[in-house]
Image 1: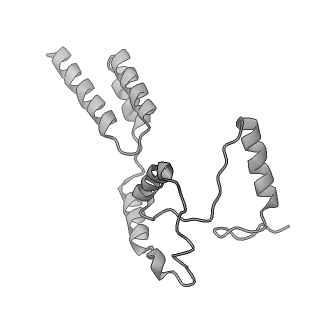
Image 2: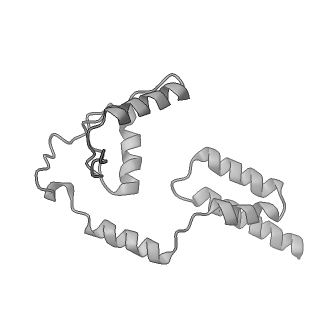
Length: 143
């Protein structure tokens, strides 16, 4: 009886791992290995560390704020034609994932470049932050 209950719990946990939205495939495989390799502890580890839950009140607040967000066409001064993403067909899935998460389409006018290694990426980020003069999201830092 105990073995059957354990197997049922493990199967339910693995199904949850597989059906969890917005999770990287390698993360899914890693959690399945943990659940299968560690009897009892694997499921407990997944429940404590693998599930993310910010609470019902915060989820309600997020949904309320998202419902109050304007459509892009309603934003004063927004030029929808200039804001369109100019991407290659192979990049479209990335923009679709972003849109599925945020509800907003991708916005053009940005540039991305892959760096040779992590040190080059960090150096570029620091240089970009140092050269920034303002942010659309935050007020300028005094000083």
